[in-house]
Image (cartoon, rainbow, N blue to C red; front, top):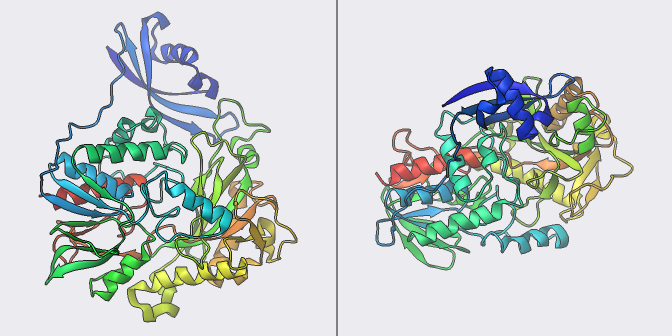
Length: 515
């Protein structure tokens, strides 16, 4: 028999099976010898008080042998001779759409403009070391999408959109740690994700699906209001009456293609700001209220949300023990993002700090219609590139100097490999964003004493938080409201915000496509 309990323990007890067994016996009111196993179901850290605690939800097994559940993949059929569904983009939305197609007996043809996950590394090195951007292979484009080399955080608030546990279980079956099913903020890590992505690819191919790399889509083939297939950059045609469009939030050429062909898209709100890097030791000291982080505590994250002049200013994609990375997708622009390895063992912590933007904020770009937000992004990214000496060197400023609007006399070495250029950020960021960030940082200090320090460095811009475009679709069928058989999907279409929600949306679009 077994029973579930929820209780708090100290970090050492949470990390020790022996100590946890003792604590579980106390909370269950039974003898330790009666317990055969304590299974942790959910785990989160409560650092609100000076003594940090770990919240646990556990299942206590007594008087029986515990056998750990084996998490396996579904019994995928072979679909090599089945009806085909074309999927554009091999990020989480596209890959999970492909898996769901196979599960439902259809053959996915997965088209990815970039390279295989391992081959992407050479192009990431070229950005970091040589300041050369490959438009089809970078931190955003390539097998696995943006999440593969930009952290692999799995936390989502989209629990009402679909079965989050199903996606987590699939990731475990493909090689992820079972901890992602337990931790409140699950994380795989950039060093672990490539192997998992390769396992997904091998599964798709083994079951008869097809994947084509270096296959950039340049046109959609239409017959009246029905999709008939796609045209690739090399001239190949891929015919299908069912196409899932899962190209991610940075595929500007796809947005422009849709607009040019008269396929409806619309500008949507998004957020834009900077990426701030602190010493991880400082964040630990603030969050854990200690001089030195204990051996049983992970590097601390933080989450901040404030209102400045009626706008949200908030942390985004916070990476404890992480790296600030160059994420441009075209020459002539600078973009930042962040990632952490699985152990989150780097000496720095970084987070996007971004400002809520509304469609009316893009009025200076109204001539671009629904692409106004895209042009707003571009203008800032291109300005940053010019101020960095037309390289991938990022405009930077110490945090207190940012508040005081003073150009920093020097910039300490940060984790951003291409290097930094000292600037006054009001020359990079629009006044609306610059003013809101300054107000937000001042308010952050009231929540995290010590956050405002010149040890922290501001990098700009953090501009790819989400898609600046929504591709409207029918709520019932998930097809584009104009084009039958075209399924806008995931982050790029404006219907997801991270790996898990994109994967859920990919599965949903696949289910509708194969009905």
